Length: 340
Ligand SMILES: Cc1ncc(COP(=O)(O)O)c(C=O)c1O
Image (cartoon, rainbow, N blue to C red; front, top):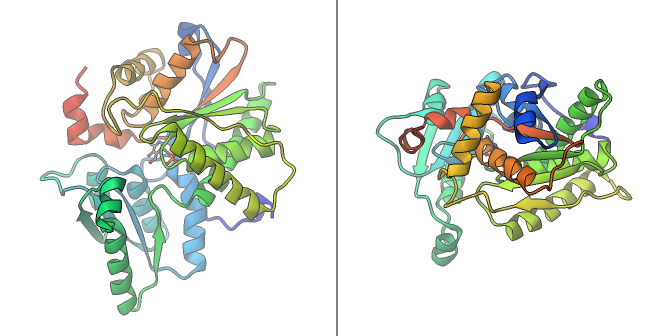
């Protein structure tokens, strides 16, 4: 099947702008850096999830869904954008958030409330080890309970996993590569490398699929992990890319190399690092563009370090994907630890 024939519902404003970061590139003395502004994709304060949700929500409509249910952290960008997409399409949305309900809603949670999410459910945040040991997953149990309740009220629930199904991410981000290839073509350039933050890995899967489809796999795709170790990411990428190949009936393509770094996470997901803070202020001061502390700030810290290490060189065109996430900067915990 061709990607263009897969059912999709328009949610964002695409193509997003591609801008050259000239002052930053000159300052770093390495490759030409371009930024793909997926933070400006036009709905619910924007971000990478919109490209994926265009496929997920099309599937929800196809299945006659009346309510979408999704999950994430209390400050989830994905939850905020799913709620915005549901509003735009006239569906209800319920969120299962891992963590405690804060006294004051800030950042993404405040936006969830402004969006009027029908149900926000808080469940305990357990590590994978704790889930394995107890045999319980509070998120899964809560989702099942909500689904049952909705069905008994005659509704049709549709579940979107945290970060979206990897297939939807793959389809969405292959489309991002296609846009970049066209935008650079106008400048008589081709992308040498895409770099983005990596969480659930579906963005990176899509960039790799896009590199295979639109760049003969000659554009490297670098994922900078914000939470998981390299082995986990490598394994998950292998599976999700294979799933996308199967779905589209692709074989015989040159395959993209898996390149993932886990050394920029610091003490953990959402915990600031000095390099992330430096990257945040450098990009703001050189380009007047804000990055977020949880995803794009750490990804930029990775990009800066890879240039210093000589792994990205002068003469190359590197595309940094601005995946959004800015509302998270104004979460209470971030504000407290992010003083400059
Ligand atoms: C702002 C932002 N950037 C990057 C990511 C990571 O994307 P993915 O989950 O597709 O790896 C996320 C995921 O939540 C995000 O919210």
